[in-house]
Amino acid sequence: MNWVTFIWALVLGACVTMALPHLFVAVKRRAWENLLFTITAFAVAGIAFGELTIMHSRTTEEIGRALQLTHVPVFFLSLGIVGFVGTYFGTGRRWLGIAAVGARLLALAINFAFPPNLNFREITALRHLDFLGETVAVPEGVRNPWTRLGELSSLLVLAFVIDASITLWRRGSRDGRRRSFVVGGSITLFIVLAAGVSALINAQIVHSPYLISFPFLGVILAMGFELSHDILRAAQTARQLRISEAALRESEERMSLATESANLGLWLWDIAHDEIWVTPRFRSMFGFGADESITFAVFRERLHPDDRETMERHVRAAIDERQPYELQYRLTLSEGGERWIAAAGRVEYTASGAASRMQGVCRDITEWRQAQQETERLQHEIAHVGRISMMGQLASALAHELNQPLGAILRNAEAAELFMKSETPDLEEIRAILADIRADDQRAGNVIDRMRALLKGHDLDTRMLDVAELVDSVADLTRSDAATRQVKLEVEVPVDLPPVRGDRVHLQQVLLNLILNGMDALNDAGLEDRRVMVCARVDGAQTVEIAVSDTGHGIAAGKLGNVFDPFFTTKPDGMGMGLPISRTIIEAHGGRLWAENNDGAGATFRFTLNTAKETATS
Image (tube, rainbow, N blue to C red; front, side, top):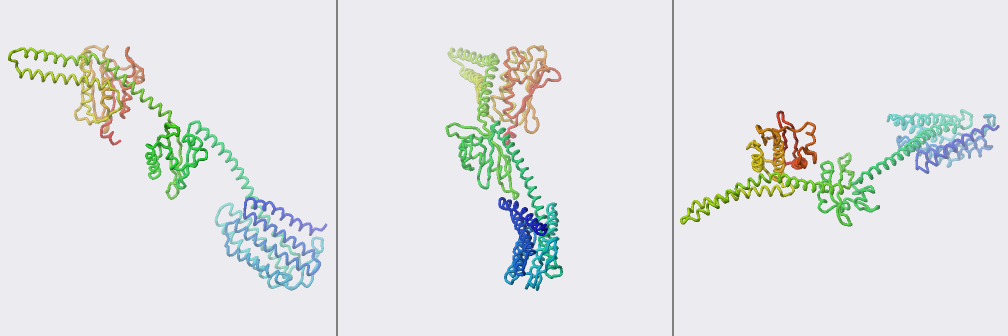
């Protein structure tokens, strides 16, 4: 068997086999390290072919020509090693690599300029050796002094590889140290081995065939191992990426389903480029086309003209002051009408603190706003009905109170008529009678005005109110009814209480309801202690508390938590709306209303109102 041809053919085939896949990767992925590995592998294959040709040469001219041509793959070998180490390691002194490749290029030029080749100035004979059971040729002759230039190039390549490997090792990463040891170490070892053997053969100290391809086959194996490791890791990364992308798509689908179900539209505004990305739900909500480009100005035009400035102010506050962006605004629909949108978002900033983008969600709340407005309208109407119902209970008391000034007017008019029948009427007395009539008329008019104000339904008209005057005005309306029921009505309101801010008519309605409820609670009580007390005090620095207490039987423990429920009542003829309406009114004023049983007898209803100063600044 011809072992020489077989072994060198194996080396050549191994190099080509390892080069081709990396050539495909280099072309497909434009990976420089794979391309440089391919160049190095083909160069080693070329050197192996040259060595085989040298060993099978029959004349000095033939072996000289084979040696000359072998220097071409040697050049590409130097180029491939320097380029691969510099690219794959990301280290190395560039000038040293350029010097190594430049020296090898100059040696290649001299190789062809001064035949027969760079190794020999003259080949005088062929020595035939028995190698691996086969007779092979080895050149003999005068050594070319330019051979030193080739050896210098090898030393420069070695220096470049060692410097790049040390730098990569010092960086301390696990992958970097492995590359430095496997690739850098193997290249250093085999360059030293190949250059040393080549130098001994050129100096004719050792008579042996050229064996450069074998050491560099080890370099190719080390480089291929590292690149295969990277390819394997890239494949694993790609597989993980596909899994992650599948999970991301699934997550996006779930998010899309969730946002669709919740009627949410997602948006992201690239502030620097003024581009807004939105989901299909957002486009449908705002009336944008599927491919329509959206900028801030385009988005602004979709808003109701009265809400544009408010939206811009909130956006500026979110960006400049890093405040949360929360806003409700209206859209003007192309087919007419309006749509209410609730939007929320946040701003993201770069490392330098500049606003980069803003993202958030929006939701169509048109139906909710309409339901809220309808609820407010119904509450207003229920409150109005409640006022009329309570005023019906006061009809007899008001009639009694009106009868007093009207009776006085009648009596004064009759007296004046008697005086006028006299031949010499007393004009001074008549003037006094007319003054009494005017005063009684004004008192009757005030009673009627209070009744008209309570019966008139209107929105909250908040203004500064004196607590004592407010309580007294309601107490005056109920005193006649209290006297009829034999109930003692007591009012204790300090004169130095701070004013509160509220709607006079609505607050009178609350007080009136609580006082009448207190009187109703005394219907079954004995006559010895039938009292309703109205008290007021300062509750903290910003609120005033008003309490209405009675001396009745109190509220059953099981019913105390339900007294503010709509249509819940303990009265045989009650509607169960007075207390819910009262709580709604107090909460609309920013206060709260609650009930509690007294330690002794009866129950107390308390509510709070914000002072005028606190409300104005909130």
